[in-house]
Image 1 (tube, rainbow, N blue to C red):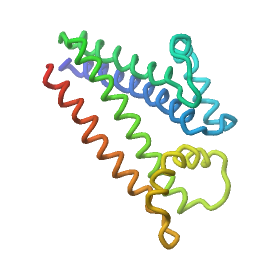
Image 2: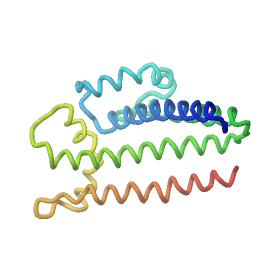
Image 3: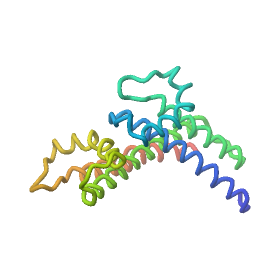
Image 4: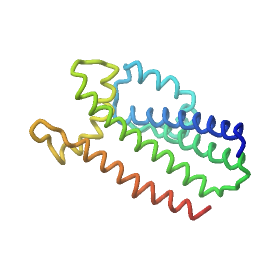
Length: 189
């Protein structure tokens, strides 16, 4: 994989797998946060991910707002990607390493997505004062995530500090939980 063609192919595979996982995790978040399914962006995400999620939904039915099929599909795509990387680089990753690598990647994508959604929502709340259904999706996605933090620290003098606390919790979770899983996976190499 040291050749430019091999590196380009690896980059392309990583990009495609990352994009598919991103969209599947976004679908999971959309459903988990009760985002309005009539929104055009949400309908697009649903339409694009339905073919991938449908086989998983037959085995893992959705329960309420939890679209476990979307996460299972994201996990499976990452498992296939890790297996493909092993095959292309002539490396034999054990099953446990493959599964743990896939788990850490999906968790990282989920936590990174929540982090960036909160950042975007904060910036939009400062810049856009009018109603825009395409921008409302950010408020809808972050409101349920920020609600527990808002109960913990109510707005002070008109300033909502909950996004700061939520971001700290997200980053600490990535370091402590995901980092611990990744560190354990490294011992299997």
